[in-house]
Length: 174
Ligand SMILES: [Mg+2]
Image (cartoon, rainbow, N blue to C red; front, side):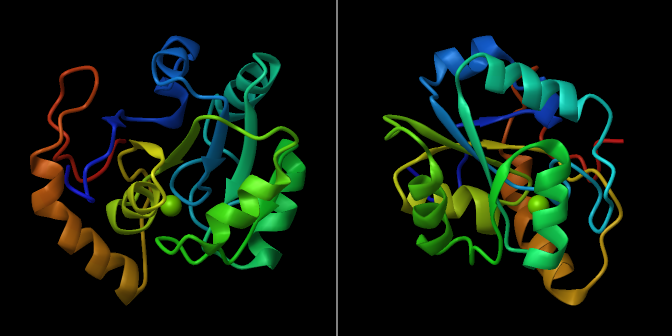
C-alpha cells in the first residue's frame, strides 16, 4: 500500500458520518485544524463543524486536535470548540501523534487521522499504522511551503476517488 494513499477521501470533515466511523472501526480521531476545521488563521470553524464535533463526541469517540501550527494559534481554537490539543506536532513524524494518543483517556484500538494534506496527515497516519481520511483543501492558502506541498499532491489527488464518487482532483472544495 502506498504511504501516500488515504483510507478514505471525502470533501468536508462534516461528510464523515458516524456510519463511516463505525465502518472504519474508529474509537479516536486525531484531527487537523487549518483547512480541516477552519480557514487557516481563522477562529471561526466552517459551517457545521461544531455540531459535527459534538455529535462525534456524544457517540463515544474521543477527539484530540493534532496540528503542525503554533500553540498560540491552536490552543485558543481547540478551547473554543471544546477539544484537547497538541500543537507543533511535526506531522508526518510520529511525535505529535504519540503525544496526542497519550491525551486519550482510554487506550484506543483504532485511531483515525483526519486532515487535508497528503504529505503531513496521510503520510503521518500511514507511517504510524493508523487509518486516515483525506479532505479537499477548502480555503485560500499562502506561503511557499504549503504551495509546494499542494503542487506535490496534485498528481496523487488525481488518483484518489472521493467516497461519493467525485474525482478527488479538485483544487478547492468551495
Ligand atoms: Mg491542514
